[in-house]
Length: 527
Image 1 (tube, rainbow, N blue to C red):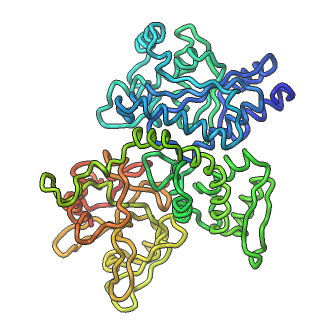
Image 2: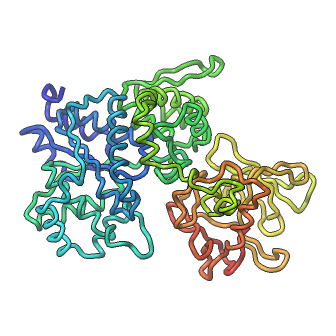
Image 3: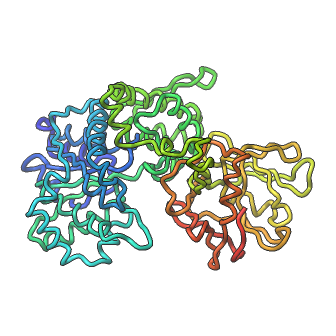
């Protein structure tokens, strides 16, 4: 199809829905002379999820525009990124990525014979590449390397040298894959600018960089393989898709940080020329939209209900996932999936085994802690000492939370405030009103004479996950069993530092935007 299009039409296809292009004039110049050579790389770490349909739909655009497209399975990068892929699992995860991404491309009708697939270790261990790594490392400062990888490489207090090498290797890939352009998310912008700065110093050409926006996950923040509640796995069952979409952040009329709307824009409209909202006749019946702008406008005006939007996205998403699920029903691919991503729970000691502790490991990742937004506050009908709050935690319905803040914070100061909630305690009735989550606060003094709600970082969204640094990858329990006292055992080590930062055993409580704090209660306990 590409050869039938004019250079301007190709340029439109290549750049549509992108957030930024570095090297626009060079891109236009190449298209006047020949087809563009572009590559997209993915580090083979956590399981690919539905957000991968965003780059896949752009790859479809590139092919329609006649581009020569290379897909890089960056296995060595996966290991360098703080060992997210252990060396013994590297080969298996790379095979999994290759199979699942090919299945995704087939699902959206992309011809695989038009693509070139390559693994990083196929050329990154060569003599020439290794020498260039040393040449580059003699030019790039530690500051530039750390800054370049800040939004991509896992950040820790004492970074490994491997993470500092990562951005330079990605820059060199552009030369060794012999491409005109690299495509990736806007979170890789600093790596792209590092490549533009240093490749000419090695005698290599500066490349074009094409950047997708970061699509919000289901909790309203970046969709992440390590944040279970934020993403839908490509092999999730239909009932799992329904459950996760039901919980997805999709506030009526709110088009900001809306992962459901973003999926409609960047995937469904990129693949199809229309999107149908399915709804009951009493609410206007089904409606077919031919542009995303119409969908966004009607949602903002609350002419589309979040429930109808989710149901319609669920139907479209399952049509994309069904061929992938079917392919992975084969015994070979089931075995590959289990080997590449072994179930950690199967390694836990069996209950009653006299050789092992009976209790499961008590770790902070078992807590489902989220950012919430207080929608309303009322006095408890049967207790003047309690508030009844309605709090948005990114689900279809706000949660009812009963707290004793009435003596410490006026109701008008709580309404509209962002707070931190523990969401997987078993609901319990407090003076006849069921409390569906616990508001986490800092407290000082006997009898909790001073109490302050914990504060998420500015810009947080309802439903965003709060984690203890070092325990980001764990999956929270569906519901904490009261007899196990998991929260109570962890709570003992939850404190507020001298600079008012919430911590567990000295590790910060944080979201992807920053740390959890309180206003004044230094050294306070958390509960």
